[in-house]
Length: 297
Image (cartoon, rainbow, N blue to C red; front, side):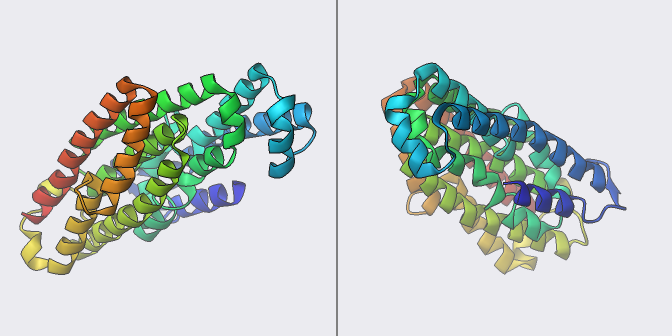
């Protein structure tokens, strides 16, 4: 858990001597990620101490065995809310999402591998892995579901107005992590992990395609200064379009199946969460294709 956080901190500030109007000094972006994640880690430590105190073990099998009979609802809710704080730090949920957009200061392959596909999904995995505790803690599950839904829609509205190509994808990542959090909150663990996997592939593809655009334009990322790139960079255009189609949830692309599964789980749990998720899917399609049409057409 800490290892990936350290790798993230070091790689965001990789070009530590450079600065940018949107990030400030790149080293400061790394520090921001480090401090925000420490807040989440405080929650993880408290959660682990609470598990140890109530159940006398930190081994998954033993904890799950004793949790069924030996864990009260209040204790379970406290433990799960602390784990949720840790997950919110690592997986960029409200209010700890502020570090992830600045993480784009790092090299693009780092964004693709760590800040879209592997590290940021650790919080979602943590909740899915400890699902036995979450079944006891119904209130904490509801909090997780609502935080996920609100993160999804808030970050989607932010992605609508970004002009930096990587920032659009960064806020999109926060939004999709919100979907995964909604999935684990409503108890659709399989759907959330499915979306975790599909998102890892199409978002890493989109980041690498954005990196290709960035290299082709000598470091330029402002989509207002681009246009007509589909003729100049046909391969990049095709891969970016495919990734955007998956992100937007167009049928027969991977994103459609995984996002639909989460929405199905949300509909059964609470129609209000389903409505938020559905509206967010509409916003997602809008900003995905804005990121295609403005630079490439």
